[in-house]
Length: 73
Image (tube, rainbow, N blue to C red; front, side, top):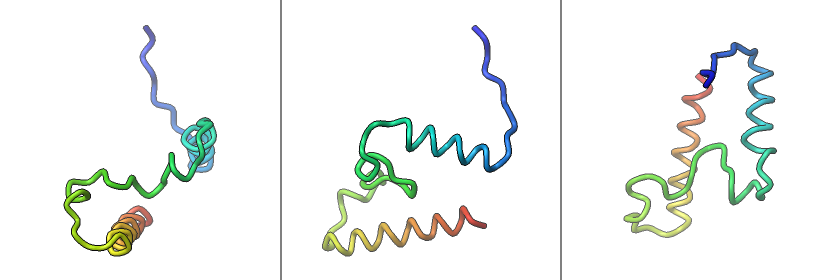
């Protein structure tokens, strides 16, 4: 069995590979199946949230935007 090796690629090549692999290789619809910012209800307090759905969605968007800002730094 051959072990995989690390291949250094430029950022545009990596972005193209990620787009092809993560988004385009799947034949499922993108919106319910793929989400670039995160996944809904995969964190510990998701099922214990007591507010409205819109408040829960706003809270999620706030966390995703914070995470996005961290990625861009």
